[in-house]
Image: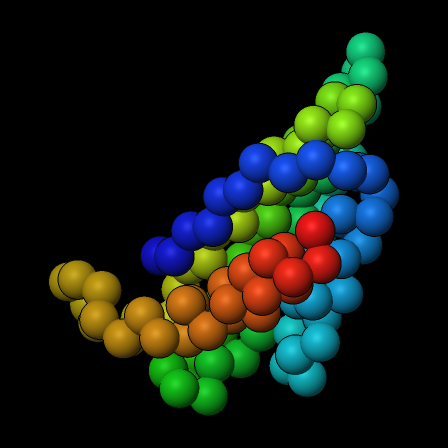
Amino acid sequence: MAKLERRLTGNFDHALDVCERAVMRSASASFEAGSDYSQNGVRVAVRVYERYSILGKNRVSMNVTLAGAGGELFLSAITSGGSQAVLFKINTLGEESFLDTLRVAVDTEL
């Protein structure tokens, strides 16, 4: 498992668009499901993506959650899967690589 968390300021819709475009740049990435919630000025968007990891020769998933109120945003992204071991996790390179697609976009565009 790999995790990225960031406190951000800015427009919720723009931040969500940056995240979605970054993840979907990968040729094997797919959008699996999403959920949106809004109440009393607080917005939450949850997205689940999956992609094939060439390094691990398996599929890796990433959950991206963006929460915001006004211009204050919080992003949490967690990857999972990618290990071929039975008793413990080894070879998490695919998870880190998938998360890096989002990390670069967040750090440069937001």
